[in-house]
Amino acid sequence: MQDYLLMIVAAMFINNIVLIRFMGNCPVVGVTSSYESALGMGAAVVFVATMAGTTCWIIQKTILEVLEIEYLQTLVFILVIAALVQFVEILMQKVAPPLYRALGIFLPLITTNCMVFGVSVLNIKEEHSFMQTLVFSLASAVGFALVLLFMAGLRERMDATGRVPQLLRGVPITLITAGMMGLSFAGLLGMV
Amino acid sequence: MESVLTAILTVGAIGMLAGLILGVTAKIFYVHVDPRIGQVSDILPGANCGGCGYAGCTDLAAAIVQGNAPANACKAASDELAQEIAAMLGISVDTQERQVAQIFCQGDAAAAERKFTYMGIQDCRAAQEVSGGDKACRYGCLGLGTCVRACFFGAMHMGPNGLPVVNTELCTGCGSCAQICPRHIPKLIPVSQKAATFCSSHDVGRAVKDVCTVGCLGDGLCKKVCPEKAVTIEKFLAVVDPAKCTGCGLCFEKCIPRIIQAVVLTRDSKKKAA
Image (cartoon, rainbow over all chains, first blue to last red):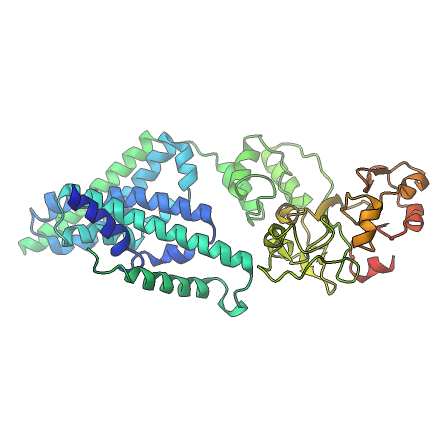
């Protein structure tokens, strides 16, 4: 139990997927201009990353390792994640229309999000068990969603002040902010 | 050779299987999406300004197709666009008059007093939080340009005297500025309205006089002189009814602070002269 707790804290904060491992940086810049869209994207990523992480783990153990073709991991995982996202989207549109509307455009965006792929590969690389895969994927994605929300909150404040120099408005100041957030998260490194 | 074959076959099989599952789920969980929704949202401006009250242009398009919103519900679309949508869906459209935003405050730096020097975040919403704003008049424009930044269509800019100016040619009447202003200084008026009271103060005459030289005193002189009974006094503020006003201009002369004025739609310096 304690191992899982440690794993959650480590995946969320200490080895944060965005700020320490530098994966999934595109949405951090792209969809953090407002709090609502960050929340939508965060929720969608939590959902898909957990699904994709576990599915990829199963594929790896039951197909790739049995047939000894682990070198095809990248290709197969991308294929599986893309299909999975599509599947979830179709299913959700029918079964849970409100959720579909809330996640809306973010679902297709995640198809090619390297954070989802990265979590799937990390699970294999660190030789997680199935339960560990589930917990690690979920915690990593929640860490990702947290960073999105932090960033969106900061950006909304910066926009409201209007004191950012014209030169730095928009993406530049976002990247600088991301760098500073990364530095502060780096202070936690080595705790676990 | 065998390993190459295994690789090709496995990846091929996984791909095929995924395709098959997707195909089958798409059939089983088929949701009929009206193709007209896409067509209508193609016609709409696509600014996602939210002026219509829906989450975005696609959302409004769905509402129009389902009959929950009229064809001209988009405030930013021109009448021609509304007609185009109506024609495509085979419904009629009640053409509604175009609305434009106007700034209902004239208390510029020279005319209105300030309680203190505000040096905080340069945003009206933030300034409003600090002791109710730096302006002595609690209804007047704070002049930090939040409405200008909120305009999706570039129809506003800050004038030289610290008040926002609306370019009515570009204004679509979406109301974003009116919504974001903590004091609701920009208001939407019909484009044909001929006169308006460019003040928002509901304070009594004396209190207005103390803080601003161009505030509505609510004395009702304009109301008395109006032959059409178009002017009413609502809580010490003269309000012009656009339906009754003929633009005769009798009230302009009576108004002591020259607040009730002709609406000159390409305003700026011209209106000051009028």
